[in-house]
Length: 304
Length: 181
Image 1 (cartoon, rainbow over the protein chains, first blue to last red):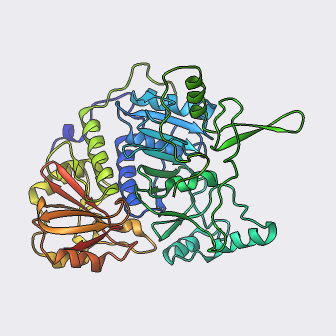
Image 2 (spheres, each protein chain N blue to C red; image 1 turned 90 degrees about the horizontal axis):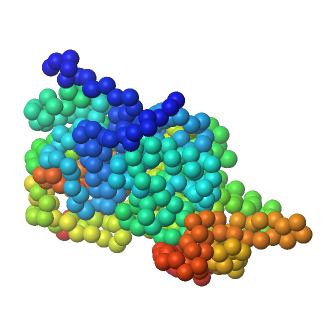
């Protein structure tokens, strides 16, 4: 062995920003995460030029996957044009040469904060969700060593207790986002703060989902065709947000997840949360040849 | 920090390891499907995954020399987090492969082995990554291996298996159930 064999030519910047050893560590952990769906795997979480808590976990997973032929879409609460999403997307394309897109159907990698797009993801697409708090047991058990033991024992009774207390206090389950869900019948995960509307999209899906928390240094995955069942009581069914009858005031689309825009007179208007779906609908109405892909929800209902 | 103005281009190493990982990722996500690796054999998998943080068990002395250049420590089977071995005979030792525990499922090893695809023992796979069930045929693996795997992999503990045939790979994660037909 020679010294030359142990070194590499000098580079100003590693391809895809992360150095090779960071990528190898992520790859090993991503494989373990797929092998045990919903189970949180610790990883090193390297420094990236962004503050922890702003999507560094998702960013590292995306950077590991990127290649020049990748097409990336980044959304923040459904919008492609928010500062966070636009900055991450432009960073990703600058360090990898990947193509940027707003179109869900054109993307190969979708990094998202707090939404899953309304158009169905295909088998060749990877969804990367940014996770602020990966531990579903944190509200009931702040000690993470004990929480780990509870995961090992599949001891999730206290999560049902939270839901029960919400029903007793308020008459319904008040958990709006990050609804605890049982993955593959074994591990409860938090699906990141996506609304209840989006959780059924992970159940027996075609695509692969990674969920990564950079600040908490843990990642987990939902492989394709994996059961993701929100925790419910047998006599109180899982309910998604009551958005099926709302109409978007800009695109005229109906039956998707909406943002509520308060008006001066006290009323409210609604617009699509998945902003590019709205853009597509408006362009279609204007006569452009724009194709809207098949959506998960049809007429405001998720087909069983 | 200022980013370079030109579009970065991956070198051969980056392109190869990225493609290898993508094949492994989809192989494990869709157990039983055949994915294509950019190069033949196990060395490419070691290159994409291993470095000084890893402990490796390797049967093949020639491959062990290659793996040593990546910096991984060569250890006995029970201590290894990545095992490169043959499954044709001497199956008893697999009882000692690291499987982690319910507390630390990530301590379960990744096992890479040679096999023959499309011939030999027929298997039915069910579990995450498979919509209903899938049937595959694998040759070159000792018949007692499958019972051994079922006995050792007490989910979520267990080991994850990559089977290599030339430049093709099949992934069998611990999460799936394998029925010998």
